[in-house]
Length: 209
Length: 227
Ligand SMILES: [Zn+2]
Image 1 (cartoon, each protein chain N blue to C red):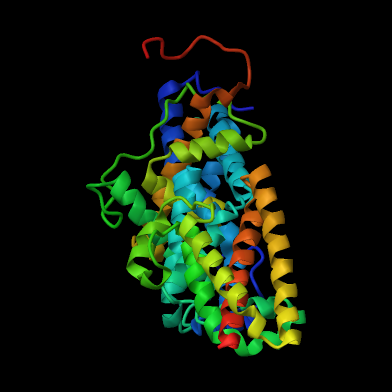
Image 2: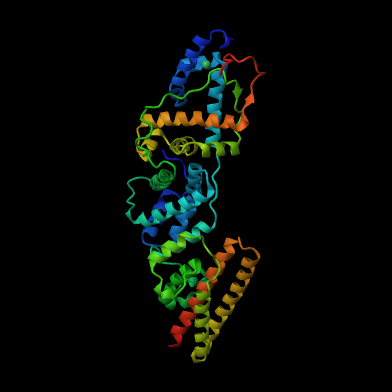
């Protein structure tokens, strides 16, 4: 199941709109834009962590959508089609910008060591509830590959099999990346000074670390 | 409660490592009794689990954000410049009261396309030479909402042309044109004042552009009618 689309038209009227847009009807373009703009922009914003980039990428994604809309034949749901397109636009951008030497289908082939944490140093609970601004910042600080999978799964609500299709990786890969992303995010939030001691400090078990 | 992890550090850490290895599957909803059990026994690991669950919950509740209003204007202009918009909504269709103008549609539609693009990108030179390839590049630059001098000149030229020939029109038709031009001039004045007072008002910018485009259409149609 793809995530529910904010303000998306009902299926029947949506396919009408698509048909009208395929014939070049401006009002149909406007209606499709209106239905999906918040979801597309928010996705770009979460994946880039930057409003200017998110604006450029959303605009680029809608342009590509409207240029390609004549080829949409309804084999998949329109929202899925659109989201895949948006994610591809963002990933292309991130690859150019931040991952010049790594392609996403080859990143993390399980060569990395499992997520490490310092046992005995984790006696501070993060949060009762995570504060939104810190969370947004910490998501923005994640490495791009992790960020993409984290956003798709935990923010957008995609399933691992869908993410595997979008990211061109295995389901297992998606799962392990997600877990690492969450652990890194937690680390980022703790470094951000949001951790609160769960109890008074005691002598550290490892004096030498 | 169970022993603290300090009592048997080595043993406890191997249990914590086992917890780590199974944690991902547990969070995916798979049944992992040892994870639940260890989280009850181990303070450190229970904190990790609570944090990850809190992060997941907070992430799923992030609100959607609105893109800036200018995004649609940029998109619309590019769609028009690339010819993807085949049936731009003509001004008289947006104002049902002017339905008598329908015969002027083809000329007006052409003018609207050219002028919308010209307005957005301040493309120098003649509107009829506006090649899609040029505008695509130009449109990626930040949108400039000032009405370009070229466009202003074009509209003024149309206006002068029309004023010189207006007398040849049937008085009833002439009055109707005059009335809609006056109303458009009022709109332009009003929108311009708003844009000048508040340059960030994208709605006013849009109205201003629309009013200019409509004025050009009306003048084009009127000139066709004189011939
Ligand atoms: Zn433990």
